[in-house]
Length: 165
Image 1 (tube, one colour):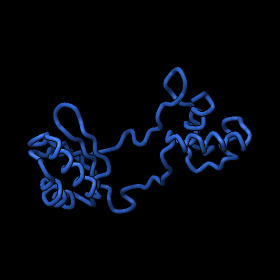
Image 2 (cartoon, one colour):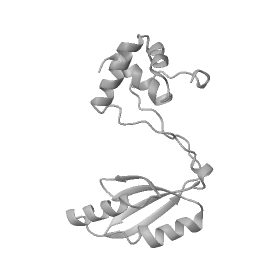
Image 3 (spheres, helix red, strand yellow):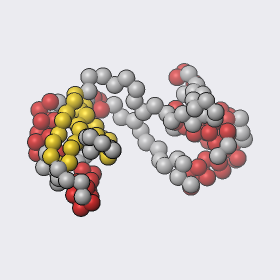
């Protein structure tokens, strides 16, 4: 990956709906070479997809909770069963397996506290191998969906002002 590929990634992380022509202009390429680079980044799975970012509150899911999960056992069968069942819980927006304690960190979204209580008691606590759940209500998001720092050298990206998107 060279500097132009990194510029393409930086631009798309900030404004994913750019046309190839707009993207080419921002990275100072003609449309053809820019398009070829973009398709190659997609082909080799550097770019894994495109999506709309939806405001959870606008769709009635503005109550977010971080849930620490401690497992009763950590054998491969229990872990596999837990992770397979966890994928089927649509309120889980993000899940990570961790080294140390806790074993998992989940970010869940529900309508309100009552919705979370039901989710916790009826679905999360019933997942295979769960020993303990510890929950923390999210008060405010400070950093969310920040672009990866794909810039060369300094580890930072050059981003354009919001007005040019």
